[in-house]
Length: 277
Image (spheres, helix red, strand yellow):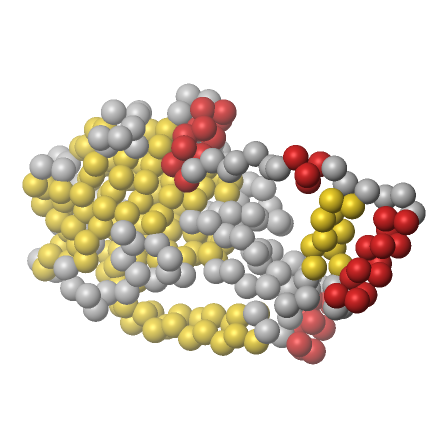
């Protein structure tokens, strides 16, 4: 059930299935838009990314028209958002009035005891609280801590040092211990910041199409709703269970020679993962 409190022109509270998701006021805004100029350098799949922010505007006055809200800055309409809860989920759709804006920040309500998980395949931390996670797919890199010698050497020698957030699979989705999941619909660069006790700040380098929330009474039910939203993976084919899948490279001749040696030693081989590209 969706409940919206809009007691004045400057306050907005969005509650979905008894979970307070967004609390916005002039003193503590939840919506920001702005402009930025990115700089991206890539070397062998490793990225050096920076952003020069020229504007970050906290949106102030809110005007309601049914389930559509108009957000203003200095008296000028800059963003519209529409709430829809018709399909067992809350979808908040966004529309920028001026196309010059290419940065967006949204603060999701939080508390200090809450834990969050997700953002794709994160390899360093399970609970994401206390850190930010850039959502951009690079090479994994060498090491996961910039303060270690091995990572420093990899950076100096080949710009190949890793960081705690480096992973080959990222997703703009997280699950909260308040038993909801949140998904931001965009293919732009994003950064999900879980450092603050009172809110999660989601940054996107465009105005996202929408953000979706679903809630549940248990984690199992929440996972079912998550896979219903994205689509469920099919069962693996039977052949993958009938032997070893070996990872080999260095050309067809070498791969086949090594595979035959493995088979001749009595090991069942179900497949070859060849990384010669």
